[in-house]
Image 1: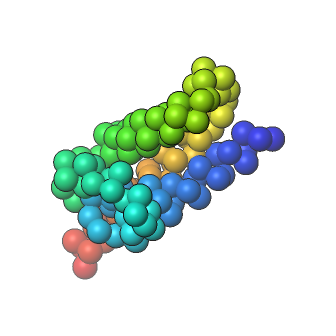
Image 2: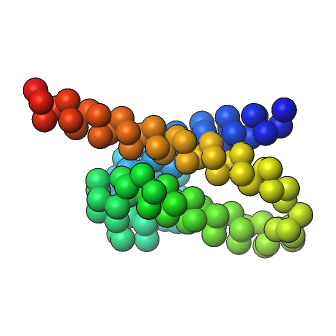
Image 3: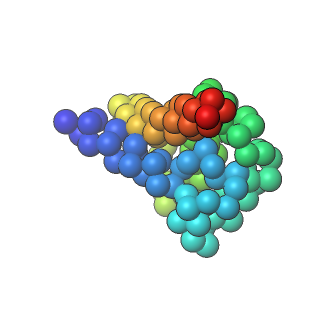
Length: 117
């Protein structure tokens, strides 16, 4: 049961905070407030609708960036990363990745429709 809740929470979190559009000043980027500084390197490295919107590289880089940030915070808090259940990690990553994939697919569909019109 907790797996579904984690997946859903991660999906919602990613929908509002981890958009592939973090490479531009968008709502997701602004929602981080002062912590958006954590995403500045991502914003500088990736150009909009480039690799950040690649279905594999985009979500992978965002999840890895977030994993580094969260890992550092957990270690600073004295939490042993090996104590985190693998089901927790899998459900969280799957929820975040699905959210980003939906964003990428919808961007591609909308772009194709605009090209046709």
